[in-house]
Length: 86
Image (cartoon, rainbow, N blue to C red; front, side, top):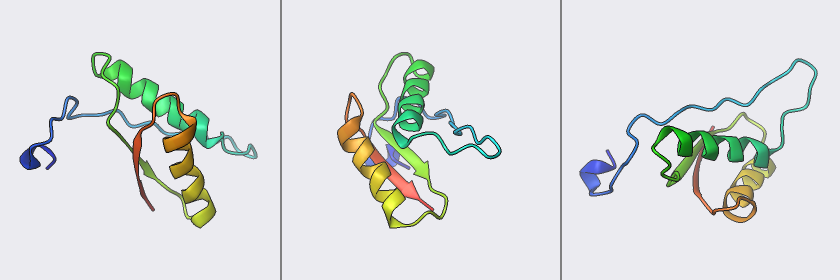
């Protein structure tokens, strides 16, 4: 779909990164998961940084959404656009 809009897509089959979910363990920090997603995408696409990170959110409310958006734009070494979907 992006290609039909004239946007260059370098990796048409991006990897899916699922954070570990240990029984009784708290989920990993958002920054850790986003860093892993970016690293995995970079390594799987001939060292091309991701243009967009798509996040499927559990129903954790607005605060969690805001944390993901802030982390993607402010706390990663390279700022990335993010798309959140619940």
